[in-house]
Amino acid sequence: MHRTPRVRSRGRPDRLVVVLSDIEMGAGGALDDFPNSPWLGDVLRRYLDPRYDDVALDLVFNGDTFDLLKTSHKDTWPHHVTSDVAVAKMSRVAAAHPAFFAALREVLARRGSRAAVHFVAGNHDLDLFFPEVQEVVRGLTAKDERVRFHGHQFELGRAFFEHGSQLDPLFRVEVDQPFLEHKGEKILNLAWASVALLDVVIPLQPLLHHHDRLKPKKLVLELVPEVKELLTSLAWSYWTRDWWRDYFGAKNPVKRVNWTMLKEVVWRFAAMDVEVGTQADFQRMMTEDDRYDLRMVGHVHEPGWWSFSGRRVLRTGALRDEFVIDADGLVQTPVNKTWAEVWMSGDEVVRAYLVDEPSPLRPPGTMPLSIFDVIPGVRALLRPDAARLEEISAQEEQERKEK
Ligand SMILES: [Mn+2]
Image 1 (cartoon, rainbow, N blue to C red):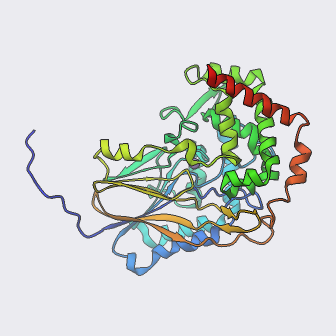
Image 2: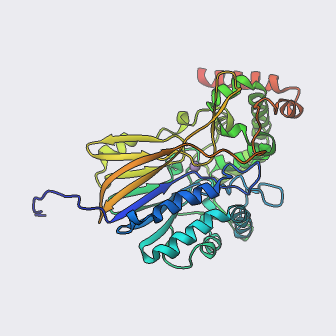
Image 3: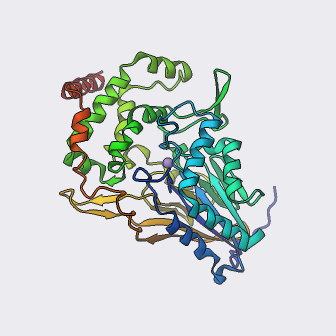
């Protein structure tokens, strides 16, 4: 095909795309990883400033906006998520975050057709695939085409948006099959790792919710080894339940789950640095594919920037609350919040960058002052043979390596 040579130009921006990920709004209280939706509402309202008046505004919530995975339903964490269960969880989260929805309504009302809100599903809010859940969100924002649900990914011109969990082997789900049929009901097709988390780790939330917010993970486990012991023993007793392997064996014969994989999932919650398991090959993506000048991802809760010949991957950090502890575990420093601003002109990405801001403090009484307060609670749950189980699993791993 003959193509005319030309120089592609990037004109004056006519669109601002604001990208936020991993907000993980929960159902309120101490267990909620993001109790600051009034702060988020203020951030969103900044884009009502007159200096943005002559560009279109797109707010992109790039996955894990709502922490529906960790939101309980009737005091349990069901892994058969029907639309009724999903709607009930979504309604609980919405009730705890009126300021978020009020800000979206205000932005949409004041900007009219020159604003759009995009939701990408992440591994914590796959429930957004249910049309019934989308209706709940539309009911709180706008019941028109300005509020869009894109599933796992979407593109605006030469910019591509995805949460990032589909790049993570542990949390990848079937792209074309968000639902399963189970006993005549439509249920969410969760990744096996999510099911394992629901069964093993998430029920520990009342005890360990705050430790899930601490970084670096390895240091947390060195300082509070009882947590590692507890997770290992719970994972092991889960693993040795035969029905579990039967269930997943039948459902997914290709990807066999083994003990090491299960342990990785469980530890990732509290014991591993997320990067270890989830480093996607952004460099290769940019080298091999010239369709996009910008790819936006989130998911691993660590802001990042990769580039290759004018193409870029930007990774937004978590907006949910996280804390860095010092070497003695006595000082907790809130991690800054990062999101992205992308300026576009038609299909072209003109410029893109990360915004970095100090985190607001959690409301009084919603976090422990000391990370060591949990030790008696964790000890009470420890099985006496936990140390022995740790030995067995170390042995098993050794044998596997020698094979
Ligand atoms: Mn995620």
